[in-house]
Image 1 (tube, rainbow, N blue to C red):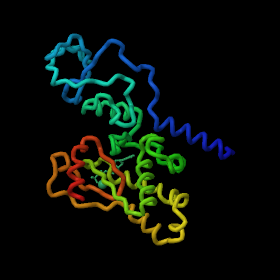
Image 2 (cartoon, protein in one colour):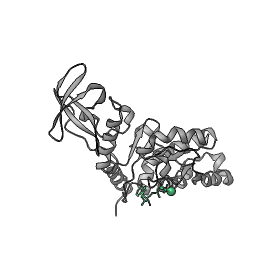
Image 3 (tube, protein in one colour):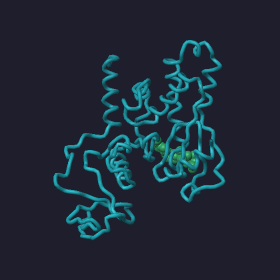
Image 4 (cartoon, protein in one colour):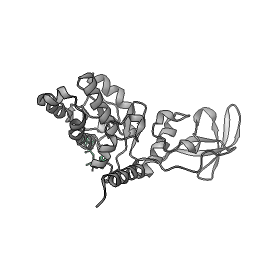
Length: 264
Ligand SMILES: Nc1ncnc2c1ncn2[C@@H]1O[C@H](COP(=O)(O)OP(=O)(O)OP(=O)(O)O)[C@@H](O)[C@H]1O
Ligand SMILES: [Mg+2]
């Protein structure tokens, strides 16, 4: 039978395998320069710069075509060392194409969570990934956001810590189109609280059964009515939920500020 240390080591290695982007050997393109160009249906495709002046750029696209583009219609691409970065805010060229590319790169490795500044973006995997196990909960317990890979547990832990430190209710916003995972995600994170509560509630709270249990009850997502005014994207969403960690399926990210204003 495995010892406690062996089990801990196994959990750590599982965590790295499932939640960290694999290191890449390719960090730069050398002399090359690339841009993103708009493309249907891909969204954006990469183009290598063959010639560039102040107004126009000649690109060789991934399809093999050579095309001239106005410089203000293309967006700069980050070198490969940024592929799979955990917070899109760290991208040196922060634009829609680069953010989508980063999310896609991570998704290809089943990394469904990525930060985008204060927000956690979740892309629905449509399959079970073993990242919600009790071992994972332990890894995230008491760890700060920048110490661990993006995960709903990190957001849950931060909220729980804020609740303990400030003794104030914490509410969060989940938004996304229908099927994005708004219901599933808080369900997953609610498992974290019973174990964290036992380990971290201050003595005063531990003696007050009522405070603790009501804190847990409040964690359950409360579904709010669909906003009266919605964007085109949100029109397909059946609900928006608060009192659960911030999760945004990428296509709906622009709708967040609308939801925040309406809930506040
Ligand atoms: N993190 C996840 N891991 C595995 N499967 C997931 C995850 N998130 C969502 N899913 C899958 O996607 C389905 C749809 O997710 P969910 O019901 O949470 O969407 P929703 O955003 O609440 O949609 P609606 O607005 O229609 O209520 C789930 O039933 C589940 O199968
Ligand atoms: Mg739902």
